Image (tube, rainbow, N blue to C red; front, side):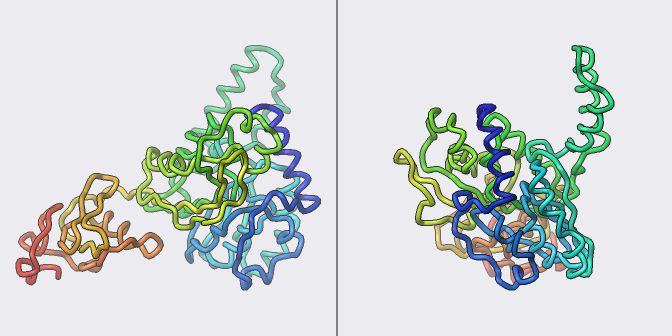
Length: 364
């Protein structure tokens, strides 16, 4: 992404905070009940391509990347309840001002001040821009030594006072913003999402993908970049990048059949990617049992475990929670509710299938 493209993103979304920009959004159906208490200005000046709020659960700590005017944050706040928290992160001053304009009013309606907005880049969730600005005001950078001191301060800030701490978030959501990040920063952005999520934490990202590689002449067009077009992930690469970062159950939960736009023969459409950060510490395959119900002969998970249709298999609790999670369930029957331990001689040996007869005295 060129400097012109970066400037175009800032300018276009600053304009969008003042006057509605129709070209910045796809048609999306939102829950009318969640919109009812929101100010009209926030609803009108929202730009997205999906509704990640529908993945929010009670008690969640939610991080909204590129939160804009705060629409999804205020919708999510109604779902997390008084025990949850919603953090909106954006780098545009005008959008942050719009979101914060109604913060007190929304807190009164919600009965809880559970929504906050912070200034930062979604590709660097550890460094707060407000803290950086304060440092630069006190320590102007005029020499190489000043620059070295700045870099040293940034490293210490990320390590000691990260804007979003490690493993502090249950759900990361975003609505059509990841495509605005420079291509060479996208991999680090996804690793940052992984960092801030708790083990077992979830991702729900609505964004634009392309069906073909995007040529350089389109990538260098500031208007197309700021319009959520030329920075889009290719549809297969979007999934692969999250898998490579360590996520499990990476999938498209939503896929628009009709393209949003077709430019130079390339289809651009809205999708919602979901994924889970694997849990640690309970990966021993010893006390949980399930059956893959089909419709395929077999499926293979990201760890290489094969599940044959109709055969019982013993798995870890972490894997069980992943495979039978209602948000990501893709065809498994849970035969062992949490707390019902399987004897060592019970239904399933680690990673292996069993017959119903051999398992009757065990979990099933």
